[in-house]
Length: 401
Image 1 (cartoon, rainbow, N blue to C red):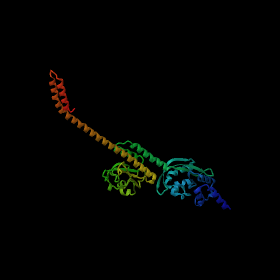
Image 2: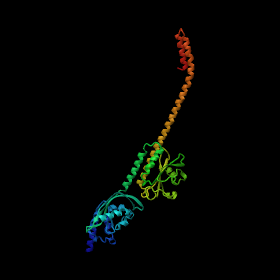
Image 3: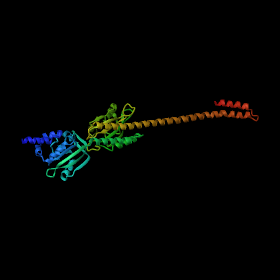
Image 4: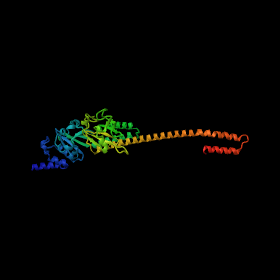
């Protein structure tokens, strides 16, 4: 009977918890410092019940080892650590970020004062690789039955997608504003380089190469972070022997992933991180009304983010902006050359007709001068009007009128 009552209490205790409520009900708590739930203090039961019933992501630590509890909404934050994390010491669950969150938790359980962080960057090992994440959260003290502090409660909102999306949008907006109305290629790529260098988390390093008209050589138009004369970034390169799949990216008009960059080129810049990129991407830069792209942009990828659809869209938009700017510059240069050619033609026409006019004017002047003299002689003292009229008509005919 006593055992049945204890089980009933356990069922009631975890009833509103969804998946995690069921997992907690079936979990062997005797293997933890907390012991069986039937012996838990009322303050712990109440805290767990509140946490399980919330739709906000929450986790809590209780007791000397801060034994780990969490609700359904928090499971995605744990990633591959769900459900392993249940009942483990908090330090073990979040070992890679304990230097960041441990002091905050210690402050809460020793002083009773809550903490608050907004968009705190944390590198989590929850997806099979170290991952850049951002979280807004608060640690609050949990009282025990004796009036002390038995643990802490964390209410958290993960802001990773929003934060990184806004960061990338700012980059695109800045580049769009800076390259608008550029008329010279050198000025265009100077503006692009300056913008790309401002945030080296999504773009640890970049290279932009423009290919010559023969499609055999490429010239470096822009580079960020990677130092001059690095083996991966020569000023001029042969497409067939560059080590970069530039020729393939142009021929296929699509991005090409590079996974063995370090083996090809050795040490790489780390950009905004403590480690260099593991992968790179070579993206064609299209040119309007041309059969093949004008060049490529080579990007070292963020080592702490997956190359997911959002990352690819950002890179495609970036390449598209550069392509549009380059097309505008080259269209302006073509129009400028056309205008200069027309001006030269107009100048040549003016000079030609000026010379022709001069050449015709001289013999006509010589031809008309005797006729004028003759007219004056015929008029003489007597002044015959008929003869004067006839001579004037002859002069007009001589001039072609």
